[in-house]
Figure 1 (spheres, rainbow over the protein chains, first blue to last red):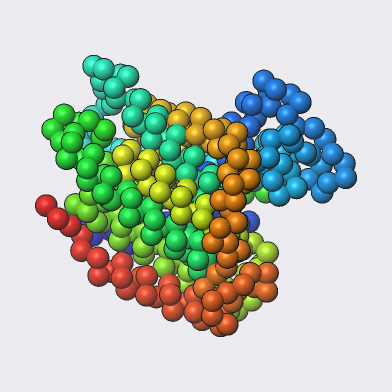
Figure 2 (cartoon, each protein chain N blue to C red):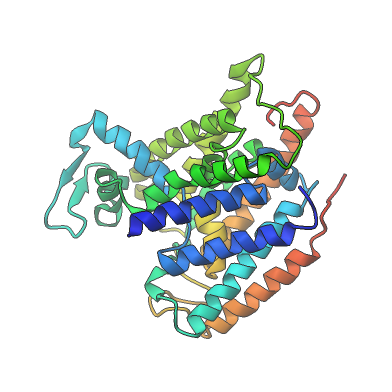
Length: 187
Length: 185
């Protein structure tokens, strides 16, 4: 990364946080992982979510999590064409545009080669992804919702989450880095 | 209209994450290993700058306060953060950045993380009732508390509002400028 334009990158990121909050609501991602896994879940088990006209959301669920907050997640699972879900689906679109438009300026990137032992390469990432979302749902937010959006609004939970996450992630990254240095390990 | 905004804002967020280098796990890992702190500078500055813009827009009354989204503070945030930190530190990605990385050359690894994430989110949906019953979310429960008084909906530590958020934003920006580009070698 070029060192001199860090501030421009920070400006762009900061403006996006603000514009999202100004126009609709602060940026958040991890809830939509629950919604998508819930969509798959309710396709396999259709009666996990049922309609309930007495509620504002119109849905109830036998699953305590989908049923939380008057069935808010149950509603999102049944009507996925909403702001939060489409927002997350659009993220790769933007990163792809960024990737394609800036690629030419740099020396040709190395293509991601298929490693010799794909299981050893992808399983740790899968487990990390599992931990990320299990933790994020328990904390009710992730790096986007808690740290960026939360701290931007002065939310105590954002500071608390950031403090705990970095206290664990920094030693973990250093340990994994030392253990796998040289052979690419988990990088 | 909201759906169009979702596409535009989600796209912008994905672009910004890529542009900042946050969608690259190597960049995130070298930040967490305190080797290359440029991404830390970017994120701290971005949060501070967004805070400044938010406080000004609240101060001059153009911000719809119902857009604020404050999350509850309770023991779940701490235990969840511990689990999250293990995943974050070992893979160098987080829920937003792994979604963004599916649009880049790191797609294969990103898909592994997204699939793991979907499984993890599903596992949490299945176990939420248990955590709730043992009182995880009732311990250290301070509710949706903020540092500054932005809206009557949320309790706050201090009684003053937008000006506090503005000052905090400025402090973040100053700290971001002071963070060295390179960390330990």
